[in-house]
Image 1 (cartoon, rainbow, N blue to C red):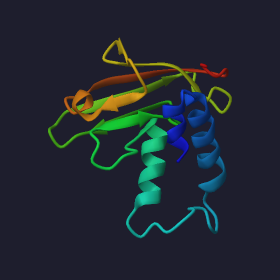
Image 2 (spheres, rainbow, N blue to C red):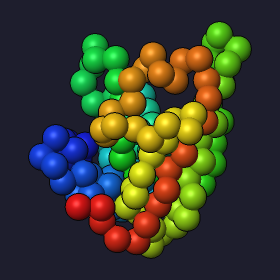
Image 3 (cartoon, rainbow, N blue to C red):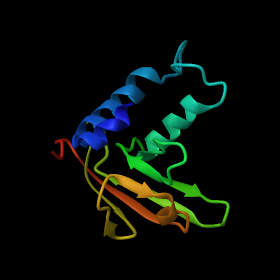
Length: 133
């Protein structure tokens, strides 16, 4: 649900909320994984969200932008290619996305098409402490 703020023209609310959920509902203790994870959905939500994007609508071929928890990561695909993810200025304070670019081109909206990442490349987030309203 947190990602739905993206379609209300308030993506900064998505960014704040996903960081709050990660910080408060995922931890190394009893009940550190909210909900039933039998099928891995809660863990998958965490991993995708930590990378800065999430497949909100099943069957849709795009991911919605959130707020990356990682400063850098690399995703290796089955086709031998990889996607490098870099979040400049990412911190506990800098939770808001100022801009996102893929292979040097700024994303036009808050969706990342699957077809644009499957051949690999570099996804770069510029983070800020202020919401980009």
